Length: 405
Image 1 (cartoon, rainbow, N blue to C red):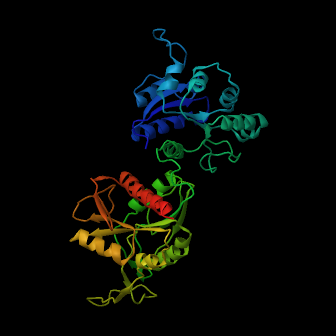
Image 2: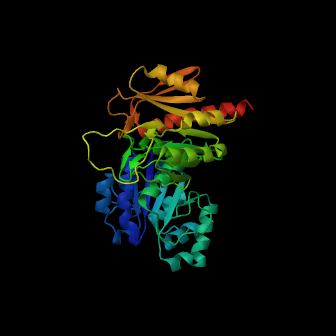
Image 3: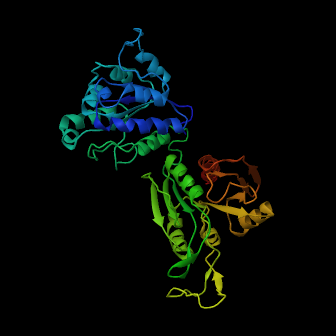
């Protein structure tokens, strides 16, 4: 989470400088405090007034303020910041950074920076591919800087990419990942997550489904990836997107498809979180043509679907963690504990439809985490924060498994 983080955003003379406005907005939306440092060439592409309006801070460009001659201390900025992001970063600026050419305020700030530095290159393909640019990038990586490139994943050490600056959403997600206090905590772990609804066909144009949006499952996948896990996300039909290269997404429609994917992927996983709202029943007979309105009523006979949690509970070995979800309308704890025991879960996440605005389609949730010997209640929170609470419990359970080996 970037809430409360102090970010120095460096902007250089690239056509991609206009995207800095979106980067600022995204950082501030997450609760970060942003101070812009821009090169003289950068001001040719975007005005300091625009940036200062967004950040509510004067933009720093020169060593001395043009208004009153006040000295802008690059040393103080280096001590103030939790991170420095240079986006866009031109070939010229990268060359100066790599070789200590401190001829502007941005470079001196970089050389004084005590916090992690993130660099998003932006230039044409020929400039990017030139040996001098590639050498600058190698030096900057060897100095401990983070290079953010499209399609190259986190912590890029190779030379993939074509020089185009990564999109602002991915840049901010990158910072959020690396600056997390739990960064890489789950590195080397494989986590399987199910999310979203299932659609059970009635005929070629109709189905039985539910109101699940997939937001909780996707938040869990994002949090696991943020902590370094290799995530397999099996999702029913939803409108949500995934951006992390740590998430392998498998799109399914029916319970049968989700079941087959889950039993194939679970043996490879250290843990599975079953967050999907899977249909308990499906039509026994699926019409091959659209059912016409011919009578006043229509009778559909249903049959049970696979109980994915119960099957995985039987498959689970002693080293694996299995997490379930229970959405209840009454006698919540009793039903959740029955499910916990019956399906051989390590813990279960309980939420209730009686807590209005916290379940289907909502951006918030209110949960209890129940295990065999514990029950913890949590206040209403954003689903991203709820995901962090759940993954904290998952991490603790994985640690216990490791200690008991």
